Image (cartoon, rainbow, N blue to C red; front, side, top):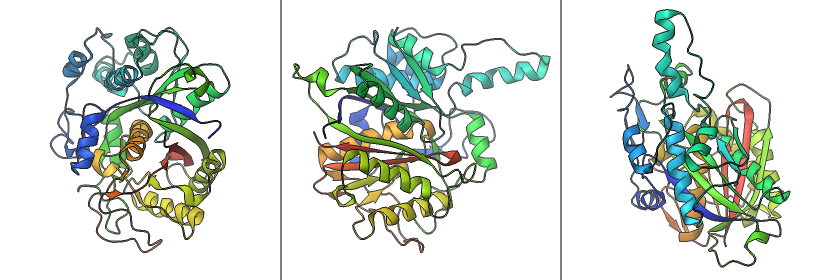
Length: 393
């Protein structure tokens, strides 16, 4: 792991917990957070199943304990909660000039939606350039004056944000970075996935032959990454290593992956190559596992293509949180690190029947095992496929 990057801080908020400890407890107890939508009015309220963070925006601001701009979106609030926890664990009291890379899919869409009635009634737009700039608002809340950027590659956004931050470290442009993803539920998101007919009216069941679609979720997950050279003279605890990051694209379709899963296969293959690992050295896969017909079939196909007869245990933790879109890779990166720290591969909830093609069953129960290397997959619309490998400290 000569080029590995140290993880020194983790922070998150999801439907199953407001911090890392609460999330781990929920995973351990097999408690999911998918319930009927509460916080967004309209036809989906009290009806559509989602993984919704229980706290209102007002409660999130109170939890932050700091002033936020009046145009601050829920995406930025969730990001700030997770980022501050990660910084605290890493012993960082102020962001200062630390680079921040945010992965997000819908950014400040919930703020934009507040202006739609004005547009409908008057036919005029409200001119605000700062409304949707979730990364800049996050930096403002954290007091950062350093390099700040956002990456939006659909459901692989946070994975690519993590990979981009790692590149900043490897190139010597920074000694530490704050990276991750955040996405809040919005009418735009829910109606969009509803129009694609990808939402399930039941609790999702990834990799099950009777899966009916996904449940959307929201949340944020952030890591503090530091170069090993910057840690030489410190005694800061290392939570794990980011050993590899990769991105590939099969350029097949706007939303679907190709039948032979070329993009997913190439992403995993390249991650193994960067980590200088062979397939049999991967102990557990945190799969993308959205519970849609196309994704689960093609991801399993890619896993089978790459691992052949050495397929490691795998599961989808979206069965707990729902699909948090641009935040998912940040959240699941922490789940991968928790799996390593606690030597526990997490159960894929509600799995009962193995798919026919390919017939690969995920973990139906938690499994205690020796875990040194975890592969975490995130595959987005447009064929944007990313894989991360986290390794034991």
